[in-house]
Length: 509
Image (cartoon, rainbow, N blue to C red; front, top):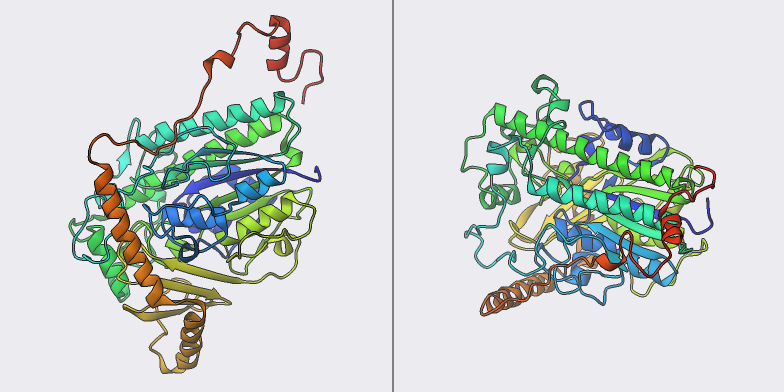
């Protein structure tokens, strides 16, 4: 592999780790992602740091928690001054390219990317700002159970339209890179919106599964006590507004598996393009997701909590010429991606980071050594009454909020998180130590005030910008037709030769 390798980040939306065969699933058919895992380094304890789209992606990009950047929820602006891995790699001489969803809120829709090939599937404005001061008001943009009660096959959908555009443009850009003569290594992020709900998918992906082979939730709602945050999520997502049948649950899970197969086909197409361009050997491929999906576990759907299904994500690094295939079990997180990519793209020395990071490089684990084995999490969006923070270390997961009772789980003894140990006298010392650590790491009253103030400002600005003629912040992809295909200005023979891969007379790849 080249000393400064290309980096291809393949990102799925709402893909829980437990839905993939690489993480033990026996239903999903994802041969291309399986192949990446078989020859790559699989992180079995990878987590998002904030189980919601926009804040999780801001952590991924910046290596910093939402409390550090102010990217609290799905309508919070990710500040332009926050250095991202795209900035670090661009500064190091990489061309940086984004195709697909990143859910950047605010007028900066690039955040260090030199090129953005598509618009986003989600709006860039403040319209989805939650309101902690009125927790009993269910806002009309919140999730609802139509995603589950209407689950099943479709002919087309918003997400299929978007993801096919994303995959096509990314594949075409790989072919362009192989032909354009730019010697810089590339970082390309390809971010799909599947398998995010609504739970509907066209054929052939729906028909890759039959009802009989679709597994059902392992933990039913009546089998576990509901914590206050889960009860709030049930209310804000209207989970108790519909009677959900077993057939609807099965259809939703079947569609989700179908959407995973759809993602896998796009991954396969991009990997095939990488091979056909002769770029495979010089490219590190990173497979990950922004957060998970509850899929009916505990009677819950979607994300927005720190239960395993919602916050544990796949993370695979595929570079067989550099990192030996294997599995790593220690807890890691998306906050670790920026320092990892910055080191891979550099000279092997730790970069001089412009801001303090909440993640650490995974290069030691990738090389077979022990790592830091710690995850910090924050949830500051809808369904919360106050900041919710999470510490994951060893086999323990501790969740704390000033508004709710503590939660402590031993994931080795209780991987399904059925028993909350926080009130058990035998674990009083452990709970006390975790609470003391929370106090050292976070000023939760100040964070609470900051979140409330941010929500208030954004709701006011959103209302003001709806008056008169709005000027959207959504990204407008640039496509100069005067430079496409056959145009005057370049000799026809030269133009045809430049566009052909491989060049006429050159050996095939």
